[in-house]
Picture (cartoon, one colour):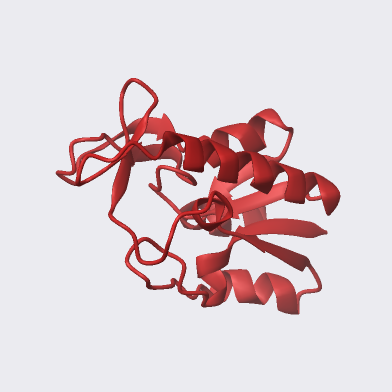
Length: 147
């Protein structure tokens, strides 16, 4: 199975703060024979690493902590992530929790106070609309036992 994954899970320092989130569960998927297709929608959208933290606003815009509207970069990167998933025949996407791009069901509320709210990141929503099963790393374990 080809699985789209957030590139930061594979040790790529592409997060907003220049860090990565190497995830052993994701690496185990590769060892089990799955093909991992890494993407970082923010980087695909042309954003730099590191970059100012950004949050999805209630009106649908993505704004950085210093007030810059980066919605078009997030949308562009999300669209490219969908294209990559389709090109590789991915049916599942495992994305970074709470991200304004990749969050699946829960994201930060746009106030930069670490307050969580229900919602989907831009890439996660587009991938789900494209027919992929989308989850974050925090729900991967339950999926592994109930695919």
